[in-house]
Length: 485
Image 1 (cartoon, helix red, strand yellow):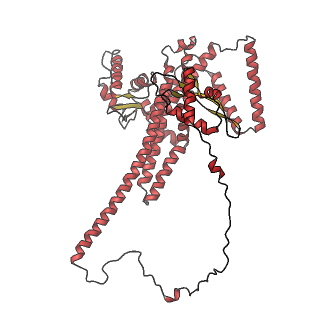
Image 2 (cartoon, rainbow, N blue to C red; image 1 turned 90 degrees about the vertical axis):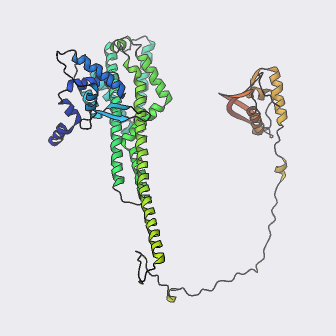
Image 3 (cartoon, rainbow, N blue to C red; image 1 turned 135 degrees about the vertical axis):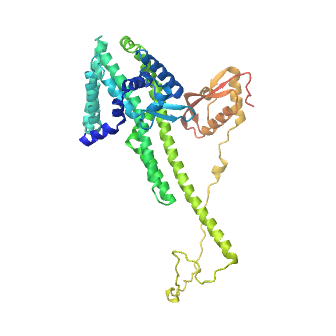
């Protein structure tokens, strides 16, 4: 950090300006109360005004004279004014009511302010273990050879085996109270930082969008070149470090198994008595929903930005097409005016780029006689013998016979599978007969397919046995069935 950089931050950075504001305790205290204490990402105008009005009332109760005399709406307008930029005010995709959320600079200030509070103890062990694990993972995935990687995994395997043996021998290896607190504090800190990162992600995406619009607005190119430019910008947004990292995070959120695992871990978290005491309000239980809400919002922003870029380029192309139409209309107008008043000068109109093409006799090629074809050679006919016997040996499957097999077995059983049917009436005409069974089941009301897998043995005309692995087909007897006519 250079002197000029720090001087620029002091004069222009929103967080420093807020730190120097006269109402700093009230503003930051309210932001923490409204957003951070409940891990809320955004609030509509009605909700945030209600919270601010209650907050100002409680503050004014502690003074003989009213310390904050303005109305809540006036203070809220000050917070979201473009010259301050403490709150971002915008309209949602499905609502006409303004929505407010913290800007990235204010998020950083709140995190810094929280870090100034004196903690019960500093979780140094958890932090150094996190650093060591990251260093080991980085080395394992970059510097080690295949033999060294296998050696590391073997060492981990031996360690796991030792832990298993220790548990079997009833040794107590569980965390004590200190380690539980350390881990929970680290989880809280990382979760809070992750939720705060969403604002930074949106800001970075909006910055990319602004730069892209400037590049397109200043470009004087043909339609194809402009389209190529917009596709490059869209690709750069997706392939940037910020975009790649966010899409990896979004893929994690879209993985049902991962989300269910996270939900299970959060529910089990508060079964630990010490954590129940540390967080009696169970703030971490909503982490899954906060991540999904924040991730969806950032994803919508990115999608909206790309959509705006495409609309922006469509508008630019529309302007170009309109200019072409205006030129065409002006040409038609000039032609109509010249219809009754033809020009008298010999040279009355010039077109740039048109020149005379001279095609002289000397530039022509000399005559080249064509070669005569000789058709005197003998044409021989080749006799080819085709074996058409295969046409008369096609496999015929009697569908009515298969329906009778199903009827017979339904009279004996209320329910059976296609596999059980094949054991009683073996399939001896290969896949053709199996496909006909499936066709019959599709047209029946008393047949359905389960997600379980069955293995069916079939034979073909040459007695070759094959295994077919497929979804289970079940036939049942119902009073409202259509039957197997």
